[in-house]
Amino acid sequence: MKSLKLENIYEYVENNIGIFHDRRLKSLEKLKMIKILKRKNPYLFKAKNILTAQDIVKAILDAYLSSQEETIFGEFLENLSIFINKKVYGGRKSAADVKQNGF
View 1 (cartoon, one colour):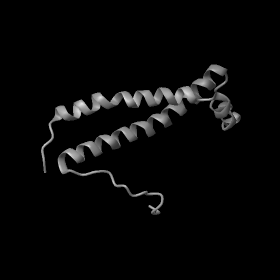
View 2 (cartoon, helix red, strand yellow):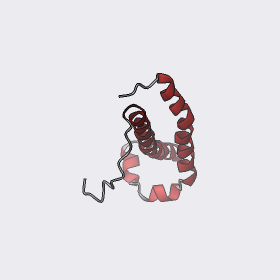
View 3 (cartoon, helix red, strand yellow):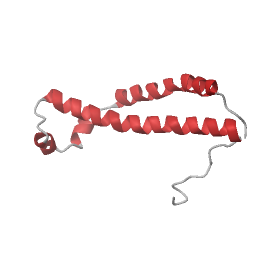
View 4 (cartoon, helix red, strand yellow):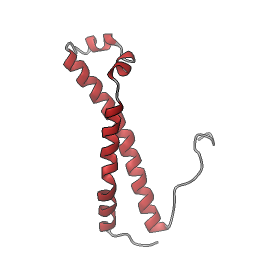
């Protein structure tokens, strides 16, 4: 097992965190409110006492961003763990398609 300096991790994060932010921005740029609104239940907004257009848009964007950020940040952390594994153990990400193998 090789050792890994904390500076290497800092450098990796510094060099790659911009990708996370770029993907968040691109996700928002592609967002079409009409498409999102078609999937929403209007009675849910009433039940949650969301009455103004501003409140509806904020609730939709908050939910959308939260979901997108979890996915994008999860991928960032996965890539960080692959980087660390490669440096310490010489490992790599499996080429197996998880969906294809039924896992």
